Image 1 (cartoon, one colour):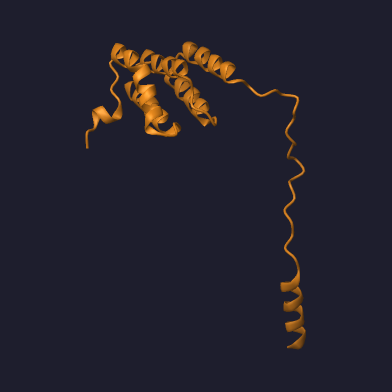
Image 2 (cartoon, one colour; image 1 turned 30 degrees about the vertical axis):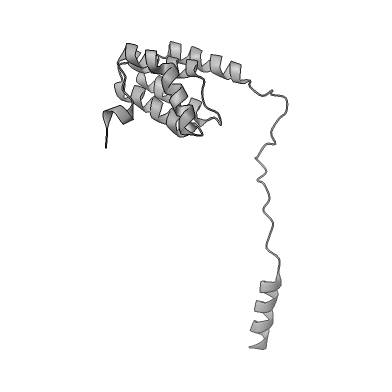
Length: 134
């Protein structure tokens, strides 16, 4: 009985093991430079201009929106045009929903809507707020 108490006391007093990174994890390399916003924008504009099917468009959107920045209006324009080129209206509408989630406030979202209004009118794209009033 006393032995069990001593063992449990020792086990409770033992410090928790510190977490060690697995051996296969690689430290980040500083050899690769940070991508500038301009090169990011140009890369995705080029990507969406060359996208030929819905899978490519959606994959590009997923990758583009995964970054910790809001894509430039030129990227959004290229993405919306790509979505319409592959004849997917729903994806075109969802691009604007993605912008709404990425921006910090309503004024920024409104600025995107204002800048892209000619594009939306040209391609006949309504935003979610226009489609569903409730």
